[in-house]
Figure (spheres, rainbow, N blue to C red):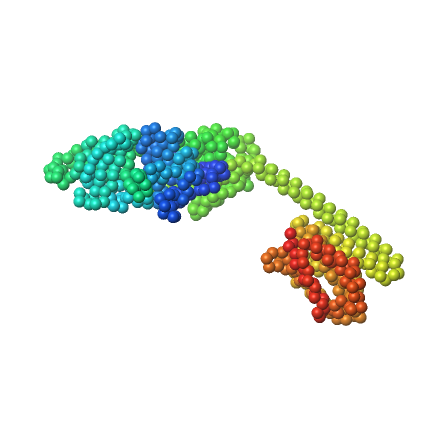
Length: 609
């Protein structure tokens, strides 16, 4: 068995990993939208003495500076604080006990009661932390009356100038000197857990008080007071008064022995109390690790197993006495997994891999895929003395992912086959049109067949590109345009007198938009090749496409040919090609402008969605 201090460190790290997993994972999905620090929850940006988040349900976290059941015997009244602010957690029903120093994550409604800002009707989670509460803030009397310190643990040194009681409880007024104008009140409620008495404190005594700063309002926000709530008998210490100082001087020599004895007794009690707390904490950690549905294990520097929980034992089929002291890599790691040499190298360099997936062997030889979270275990001086691991069995999840990936791949193959068959069918139609055009002597009719053949070919080309593309959702539109233009140049027997410039970058279109744009460019380029450069005239055709300002795309097509011939008149402008161009632009949901100066230029802008 490992030593108790080492075991506490190991289990402390395992608990921290578990708490982070629970709060940020499973429970994180049920937290409300408003998650604030204590300072943010108390914020009052307009200075009207009302918190900005009053009445809202929110979540915050802090450390308790008092045990539950101390400041109120029948209600939950606990103050939480962080490094900057404090706040009261108040419930009618006490709920789960909270100890001083516990970390508490609370979700409730922000309310005010007699000036006290607090979280009420709250659900909360207590996280035991094996470290002492931070020291109380040492403040002067004049500094305490401030919302900055409300709900926080403070300590003050002052003289008692007044002592009284009423229906609510007992009070002490403190001033740093008797003639000071600044004062603070120490309040002990009748609902306070018994143990503290003001009866032994007299006016003129000099005392130190440790407690929580509270606020109350009597008759409106301008009549605001601040109080200190002591928690335990040891929170109030009488140091003596000037009038009796000579007695202290006389008694010092004789009292040293008594003080030494009292110190020894107090130390023995403190050691006994801390020992009891450590044992209780250790038992809570162990119970927690034994009941989580995750595999927990810790290794020493040699890779030997020093701790394992019941869940991992039930998963692997081993008994605890069979694995403790055994080498992790020899017993539970397959030959293709992490090696003892790699583990030793990581500990030597201090670069432990925090997360990884790997296989683990069960007693029967079955392989289970585990997702591990790993933390180094260190001594107080920072020396690494092992690792702590928490793992989740992800075997079934990985098998499901692999099955899903295979299904997706199968569907992609089928879809590519569909594109291939559509392309083949369109090519067959194109071939039929080509054969039919060979039997037509009328040049006009023959041209109509060739035009339709090229339109079918442009659609077939889209499916060919999709068939060969790595993704079935989009194609490389620049590559498609260059292939389409080459096909048209061959169809119309264009020689080297006409050059083509294509400027298309980062244009990614879906299949429907690609087909429409392909048909549109097919019509524009066909018209240019047939009519813009008569009698072998030299020229240039430019096609550009890019993202438009404000979203969508801008397609520009231009040639430096003769433009619309005058003799064609309205007949040309009302032809099937022009009608089809207008229809395709409308299908894209775009707009088109045409200029015929120095050639013909079309600019089409569309959304692309």
